[in-house]
Length: 244
Image (cartoon, rainbow, N blue to C red; front, side, top):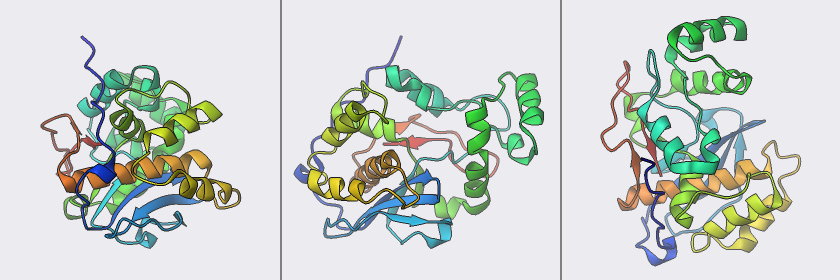
């Protein structure tokens, strides 16, 4: 049985403000892009940085990258997210396992993955360097304020349904911005997107980071969703979860 989609959440303007800075982070061509909302609820322009250590501080950051990796098999959070997202299920990768991070070629990684039960797509192989970067950087202490999310879960929670259109289409961008109403002024986001060219972050990277910022605010408010409800931890003590 397919789980129901995340219930719509009220616009954040209708909720108590966390009163603390929150941020969302997405990977981009130049490294990482952050959308940050300060303690007073004000947004600055998106920040593009080359390394995680350059990110401005926030009391809660939600990032679209895998944190917490199994040695074998699939993560429950990935399977649950795919079940919730319906037409957007393919945006959630499955089959990333820690041993893959040490492999030096796609052919080696794909062969190992198949022996373990699931091979790798080229797209998954291409994001492994960023996963490796985060895995090298993250610790259980850092994970308390730097947690994994997924933008499509954030959009679905805001809209009460998975997005109908692919994010790189005009229709997909519009429906994702519609779902963020009440959290940020549309004109503010339009200004960001008008300036995206040449920044190292694509338009959809910025919109994804915005959705993750909303997830971070919901975490501090205690009104977030979590997959799975009781996440297991990996060998390093990191929860294999998604928050939204």
